[in-house]
Image 1: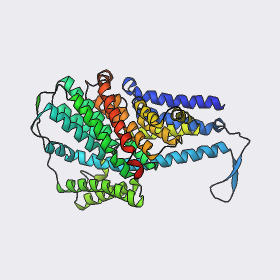
Image 2 (image 1 turned 120 degrees about the vertical axis):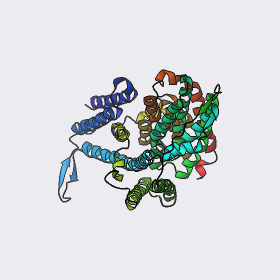
Image 3 (image 1 turned 45 degrees about the vertical axis):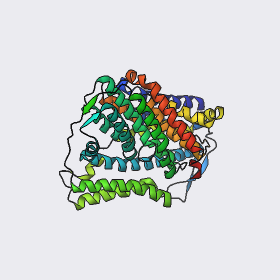
Image 4 (image 1 turned 90 degrees about the horizontal axis):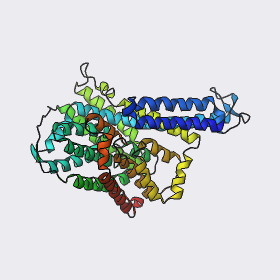
Length: 442
């Protein structure tokens, strides 16, 4: 029974992975697929607890709700309940943080503050090569502050407004995907996998900030390779949106929340989720104070416009990974680290994240119990954060860019595999070199 259940549950995880990779083919949202299969997997675990490797005859006494009486329960059920509670706790902390951060960004984006910042720093007439450099730098910086989906959407809108020829548009798109993923690895607000590794206690905020240097190295190298042949000029039509004082104040609150998240965690070990929720509450109160919270534009409505599909996808994926941990499948990941040096295994994890979504891959490594130094965890943070850029389906930024730029297909994007791989390798190498003398000392 145990082997049969393990095969069925592992098959569900594989189906979920196929659902993510083939989303554009089957036309079924990956959030729906992963959520269904994730919950189904745990239902099967509870229905067939003996499949977890325990005997029904080994019943134990556990307290019931009133705390005074006990009942005989299969130890497999106790183990499964504990595993589910642990997974739900991790998911809740991640969810609350993302809801707060994404609500901030949704508000500022709708009010035009982000768009205005882009036009503020861009000249009206610029060469294609210089525009490519500025686009890469903007995506790198902006994705560290905002989530990578928002950064990609804003960048895609900018690219489409330029009316470039197809080959040049694809170059810009490839750079945006790589730069967005690279910028996100340096701050917990920028990438979910970075946040997951941070919440596990393996890296500190200060160490993550240093990771921005090797990540920027990869972006610069890719920009130089893609800039070859760009000799034209571009005229940018600026459409500035009037910004109210309350919008500027909320923008300052957002930036202050990011800074306080870093400071509070470094000094007092306050969870980032708590600081961001506090910042979100201040945003709500400020909007009310300025009479911006009214029936025509209620401030709480911005929670409804965030990417809940993304949050549900994370929920389904993390439920599946938690299930794989319960049945011991994740132990196979340890064998890769036993066969290869850790730095090489981490590098390959990044390459794998181009085909396997980096969220389940990161969760699998975290839950497998692999023992690594701070330097090695930093290598993994860069690898799984940036490695998904190698294929267009390997990251949320790539999927979003595909949906916005019709010319960008899997086949078109794979033409950039060599420069993308070289840039990824350069960034990973810089992370390895920096780790020799910096990461472990902080």
